[in-house]
Amino acid sequence: MLAARMSTSLPRTLSSVVFAIGGGVAGVMALCYGTGFLIDPTMELTTTRDLDANSDDLSALIGSADGVVEWWQAAGELHGENRISERIQVRATDPEHVEFLAGDQVFETWALVSATETSATWDIEFPKMTTRRTLSVEPLDAGTRMVWEEVADVQSPVLRWTTMLPMENVSANFQGAMLVAEAAAQARAASKAEAEAEVVPEAEVEAVEGEAPAQP
Image 1 (cartoon, rainbow, N blue to C red):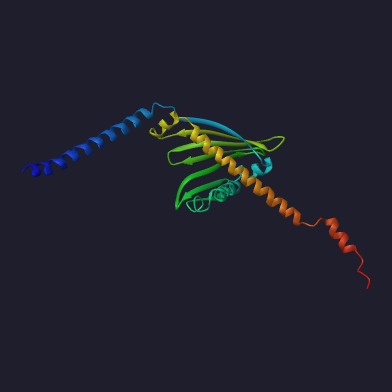
Image 2 (image 1 turned 45 degrees about the vertical axis):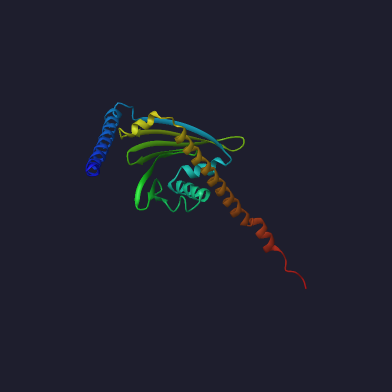
C-alpha cells in the first residue's frame, strides 16, 4: 500500500519541481528582458596590437571584401581547416560586402562604409546586434600598429546585460584576429616577393638577346 502511494506521489512531486523550475527560469528571463531596456545599448571597445607585417599588406586586407576573405582564409590555415573553414564559410558578394555562413545560414555580414590607405570602416550586422568596426594601421620603425575600434548597438534587451560584463574575452578575440591578419599579410608579402623573383629584368633580357651567337 505504501509503495503504491509513493509510486503515485513521486510523479506529482517531480512535476511540481519541474513546473517550479520552469516558472523560475521564465521569471528570470522576463526580468532580464524588462530591465534590459534600462541598459545603454551602446558598447565601445578599442584594442591595439603591434604586428610584424607591412602596413600596405595589412591595408589590402582590411580595406576590401576580397581582403577580408583572404584574412579569414588565413584563420583556417592557422587553426586547422577542419576546425574552422569547413564549419564557417566566408564569401565576398561584391567589392564592398562580405557574408559569413554556417552551412546555408548567413549569421554575419560586413558592409564597407569607407576606406583610405590606412583605415577602413565596416558596418557589421549580427542577428540581434549591429556594430561599426574601424580598423586602422600605423607604420612603425619595425612593423605596423593595428588599431581595432568597435562601437556596437545591442538591440536585444537580454543581450544588453553582456555589456555589463568585463570585455577581456571580446578583446582577446580581436587580438587573435589581428594575429591572423599578421599571418595573412606576411603570406601576402612572401607571395609578392616570390612573383617578383621570377620576373627577369628587361635589361637582362635585352642583354641576352643582343649577345652574338657562339662561334664554333
